[in-house]
Length: 461
Figure 1 (tube, helix red, strand yellow):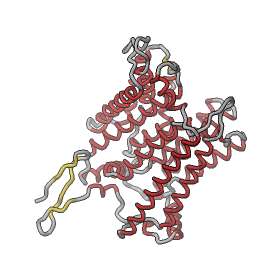
Figure 2: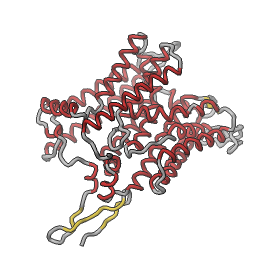
Figure 3: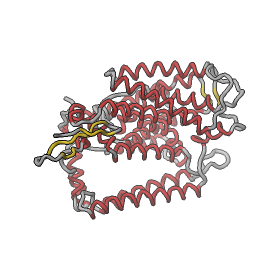
């Protein structure tokens, strides 16, 4: 007789009786995977790998190719329009300014992979910014209506409380979507409106500053966005990261080949490592140039490693864990995932929690970036709601669910940041910036729809 086991995170794990009466475990993560091994993994040479890759592109599975080409077009076009666009100083500015868009895109990806949408990410960011700024106001100082005398939290505690509150917002919204069965559009639209009101109530009409250099917690929050490592420390950090990444990729692929498992050809692993080395050297080299108009500002900004750590953790979660496979399974075909035993309410709830948590991280960065928070700045978080969706979709995440990676958040955020920066350098008014981004978003959506149809995916028909 078959038994049902339980997974503490994702729900039931089934077992079925074999021909001899013994129970045989069924891997429910298989619901997220294709029934055959991807052909590029069994390619024996780089030529075969490239041939298979090209066939997949022609079949509609273009991956990150369109957005990479789009990023190149944006860079070349703005460089022609303004020769300062690709200067080291401006490129570092783009990396820094894009960090907010990247984090919000990473937050939105958790919802989009499910085939849902989260319209509250921008306001979760705004609320997080207000909370962390209020919590580090010194004791005895005039503060918000909820804490009129200031709390004087240390920076680490203020950040922890802020992220916990933001995750709680995701828990509430995820519960309404996953268990009460309310449409995510309605739930998160309501969250958008409620969170804006709550943020303004906490702000109490009074501006909040993080400029008090005599308060260590405020200095630490300020340095999250504006601080930077020395050039020497920047190179050391890069070397450590490159050694870890190179060793992990090489020994992982070599181990799979040694045990007879599918793995890309060795030359492809070498090319990946070389590409990361070149990208890292270029990035740190750019950051180590003096980008100050007066004085000296050199070194890797803190914000870049922070964003990369978030990106790495979420990549591992979605690409290397059972939870991640369940997310893709639900987004690709929720009915099939449910029949396979995946606990849909639990996974969906966790995705909304992680989306709000990521937006909360963006809120801490937003407070550090703005330094001085006012009612108008918090209200401007409304625009970030749609930019979060735009960045994720422009980066390559599908609106139909089940397809997308965290790298799409990085690329989409860079494109949004590059467009804003380039049009600003050209002196273009804000309304034209919105129109330009809308055109890019429509183009990305068109590519998504056409690739879905060309690929023959009917799972959501």
